[in-house]
Image (cartoon, rainbow, N blue to C red; front, top):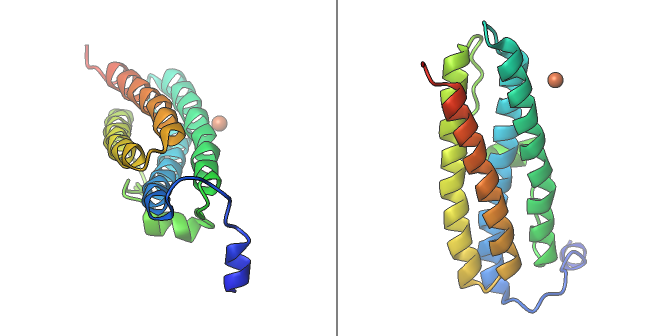
Length: 165
Ligand SMILES: [Fe+2]
């Protein structure tokens, strides 16, 4: 068992304790990114109303962008010698962004909930960046900047699309 786990120990010059803390932050971000991905897809599938086409397409674009980030986050964890999430159950244990299993959500509520979730992700990204900077993990820190910019862009689009007039 220990021998198998040791086989996953990618070499790195970063301090083990520090990379563990960064990995914990990244694994939390990864779980939230998957939770946000499935919620964005859920709303893409279930959105209704007069703006159907616009919202349906926007949510699909956002979901694709969110999904693309998941692999980058997980591989940062592995590059720094740690292990990442392994299952849907693992995602559920780590996520802080809440699922929405409602039978019906209005289009307006979908946009505002996703906007808030993306802004919550931005906060988590800023916290993770502080941890990465303390660990001198500059590559993670730089990648977090891109993920933050993307989440802020999504929040902006969701805010504008949800305006009443
Ligand atoms: Fe689709």
